[in-house]
Length: 63
Figure 1 (cartoon, rainbow, N blue to C red):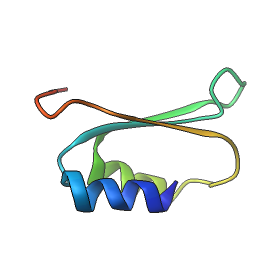
Figure 2: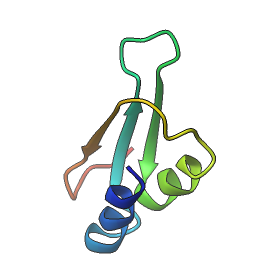
Figure 3: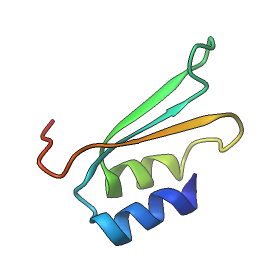
Figure 4: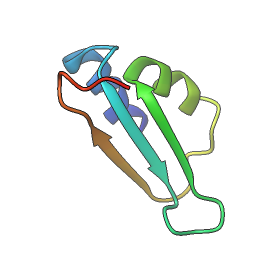
């Protein structure tokens, strides 16, 4: 997941809105939503163990 988010920041830009979801439908599910660079920084502190889903918003999407 780290490599994928790093590539999004590099190719699509640090302000592209993304969502990273971890362990969807389980008791301890997590969602990180925001600009790709911020999500990358937040994920650096989270466990990488588990299943992830990565969503990329359209260019003109705003939170």
